[in-house]
Length: 396
Image 1 (cartoon, rainbow, N blue to C red):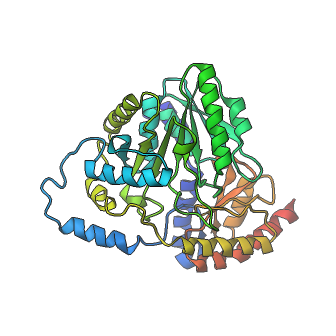
Image 2 (image 1 turned 90 degrees about the vertical axis):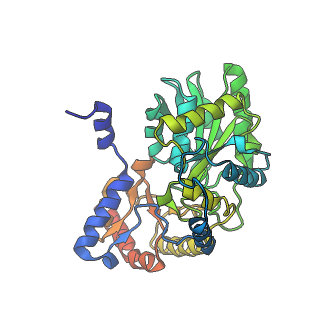
Image 3 (image 1 turned 120 degrees about the vertical axis):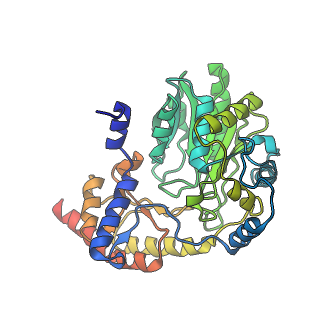
């Protein structure tokens, strides 16, 4: 074969999310878009807020010398200053521009962080269900993931993390609000995790870093708030993006924020900045950096996602599904009525309903629904969900 063996293996085990998205494209061409109920991809359908359009017009019409030139690899200083001021307020920890790295989305941030931290063979602990790309990100930089379970309601299982820590552990990677469950980890769990990592770092004689992937931080419901990871643990890093809260996934803009008192913070930031360059990102998009500089704290209308969550949860409950109501993000993660989640997903396809099997997130026996779609798509799908459950139970 012409391509590398590792890439061949990666293609074979590549994301179920993309596979189902591509199947949706095929079905829409055959049956028409209105007759296909595609919940495969977390691609926000809400348009960016008006403030984004205003900021974009202002920046695009401005007369800025060198507006499209190279910049410091960390990003524009004025943008990093604006981000640092906002993150300081959000996290309750005072940061400066030197603690911010502007990146090509949260994925770019995570890759820069892992590139700076991992030695060959190092382990990254992740809690299942988890975003499948984490395994590829760790592998990109010579590491690997060690998967631990969450609790039955998908909350953080600190005891499981404790049992998994070993001399090869370098990073504990969490995601809250979580993709695919929508669960939000509470403050007591995060503080317990911070205490655990402080203790184990002392015992192992090395720094264990806590990395929090937070692109859904602003998308929360029912008065819930996402606790500060920087306040919970000193050796922590936040990775996030503007893809979900501003509905800008195609613009590929995010950032990493490092706790200002983290061990060897200057070396860590220097390594991440270098990684931004050598991984080929070079710097985050200049135009978007100037736009979001004006938009710190802005967000789409989260109430629209909550309406969809409630509509879906009611419909699935009436059909007999077992689903934990999410506190954030825009995903549901119901239990499959049969153990074989892949087979059940195939059954749903017979009614042109597209979801992603939980096996793709390290959690077989469940499936993920992305409800960032119009209400009419949710309403139109409910009959198919009810039919598929009845068929699955009938077939045994």
